Length: 437
Ligand code: CS2
Image (tube, rainbow, N blue to C red; front, side, top):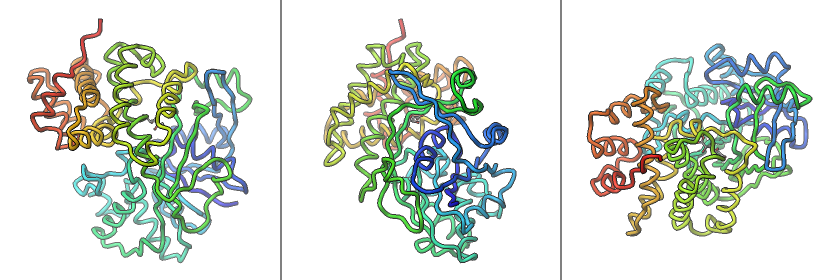
């Protein structure tokens, strides 16, 4: 048995990398680590770590039971076991899905040394952050003379593997941990794609009624799936290529296309869609106002794609809209809206800034930013609040007593400091969404 250690056992992992690993040739199993809560571990433990994946498209649903997990560790309960797992000879490679904020990076994409959890981890042997676990776990791996491993970053960040490697190296330097990082681990970049809503009681009830496998912690996803990984590995890794993974020399064009077209329009819909009274993606894309805004943002993003990234982009955009319209998935806009101050910084701001540098106007990018500020202000005014790492700053920025210009200036500076110049602020204010009728 050969183990893939996975850090961040959310739905996306269970729909994506776990599916590829379950279908890869050979006998692979996954040891999952939840970095925060015990709830998924508890649900999965009660059913022998098996779970149902409901794969859905316009034609209907197909239920698959995945038995690839062999256990789950909850990091806050057993940090030592997690460090041991990073170091274990049996651990062939590591995959990671911890969301953008889990990388604890600053606006420049470097380790955020001011982050309270990073500061905690620099001083303490029991980590709280992904970077702390990797740095201390890899040090243990070196001490045990275990072979080098590949760490696959699978989150929506440009240059995700490289960023993680730099963050771990910086952490080691600051913590005085001596790890020859380049010889103990490889950190390839990767682009991952599969739309995966959060689990709901309705999905569990549906699986209970329709599927033959267990129903708790079931995951629903679309049929479409893509994983493009930089060909830069050490040690043993599953033959994911046999089940559809593309190994390439440069992931950047794939990740740029996906982040700017899919994720950018997702974040736009998350705010403009809710502003217009919608709850789910398939409802938002059926609204002509939202659809037009999506088309415009795609067109602005397409202008920034060059070389391989631009290949087949018209078909790519049209396939995206079919995926959004998938009526079988209940993909909540509120789920996508989470952490928007970070997401906009990698999904929309680069398009806007590249276009501005070329003297091109970007009304659709401004519309996306305006929809975010407007809907976030509405959420705060209604007492719903915003789920965002910059929550307190954002709440203060969007205080109802401030002028719209001041609100926008303070909010967009959280996304990228280059956006708080007056020209951008005025353009965002002018792109304010019309009140829903
Ligand atoms: C979404 C992504 O929640 C979000 O921010 O944009 O999770 C998106 O569904 C995936 O990247 C699709 O691969």
